[in-house]
Amino acid sequence: MRELEEAFERARSRRAAAFVAYMTGGFPDRETSLQVLTALAEEGADVIEVGVPFSDPIADGVTIQEASQIALSNGATPRNVLETVARLRRKVDVPVVLMSYLNVAFRYGLQRFAEDARSCGVSAVIFPDLPLEELGPIAEVMRGRGLGVVLLGSPVTRDERLARILDASDCFTYLVSVTGVTGERSEVPRSAIDLLRRAKSLRPESRVAVGFGVSSPEHGVLLSREGADGVVVGSKLVSIVRRGTLDELRDFVREFRNSLVRSHTP
Image 1 (cartoon, rainbow, N blue to C red):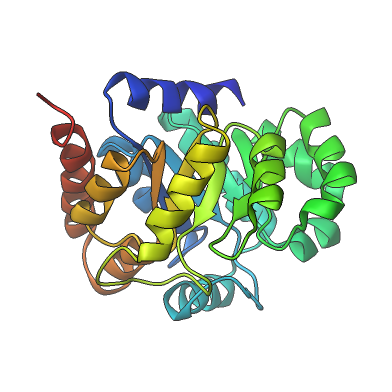
Image 2: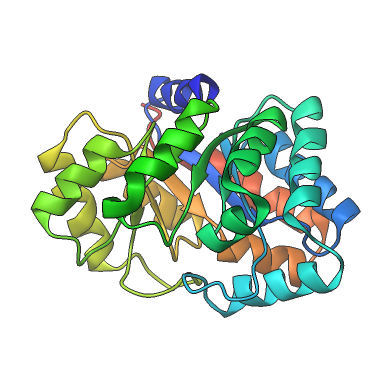
């Protein structure tokens, strides 16, 4: 987990938000997936979030749902997604956060899931369907194996509950910009800015990363200037991989990262 904290600290030293790049594991297939994840790291992602494909991804929009189905149809499993992460971590020094629905972890075996994730180089896990009230036993298993647990807050989360989430989350809290599912959007919704400001008002020292709908360098710059410690780009990257080339992905990631850095350069 320390490597994840250090990634955010390096971004803070640049006075910019950390660039958290999401990609569905095993998409579109195992070998291409490794190439895609490597490109994200090489072009400047500070943190890579790898989603474990699932047949009923309730928090994901159409783009990531379709990516999950393609990955599953091409043989993706939790185990071989972790193996791809291990191969990635042998090549690059970029921390990986694993996003998985709880059902996947329980079917895998919760303790074995945590042990295998950590041994493959994962720093922390995100369970989008994990309620705060059920965190205790899950966190005990994850943290006992050296994994952080990242929690989520949304625009409808009340201040008292948001404060508890900020206190309980490891390394950073994932702020969901809208009430709904993932997907590209033309602009940063007002709800994202309001949620970010509430979180920073409640817990000024807590790290927060904003995701769901961050689709352009301009979105990232706006959120960084508003005080986000990280910005998460997902559906946009998945769309590029599905319709474009690896070079197009590299170009977008490089420009996004450079925009974050330039936005805070005197």
